[in-house]
Image (cartoon, rainbow, N blue to C red; front, side):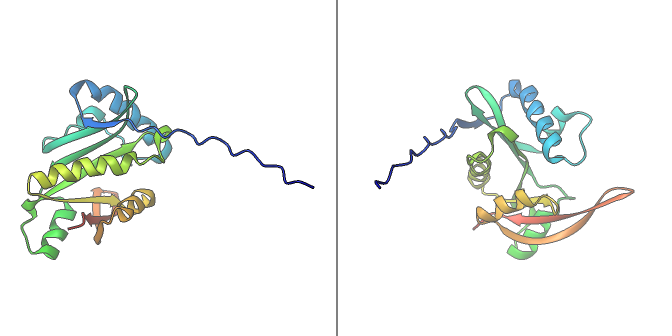
Length: 183
């Protein structure tokens, strides 16, 4: 009996899109994507009263979006480190350099419908490149319960600096893992 070849299904096209600087006109779309992420993943764990303001922190150095066919599919921000940021303090202890020499990567999210195509890694690369151009070392923190995000950072070669407990409210303490970009 002759072997009958089994047809191989055509590969699903990978959306490549582009990573670009966030424009003020992107904020509404970013909030929509953030709402979808919150519904799926509970990120952010505390939904902000003003999500557009949450995405536009006062210490913002830059923000980028993943643009797929004219639609926002992801977001990332880079901020100056602040006195309450755990990751810059831990990096400072390890590197023996001032915490002010860091930039904090935050507000990273990718639409649930656009995942699995490297968008998070591409957004991270844009923020890291910008931090390095500013002669700042990128750091971040992530909730210990957010294992998918931590797995992404570790795949990208980020180093776990340590874990700390943070009081987010009088009744809520959370554990965050702090990471530093590869040197």
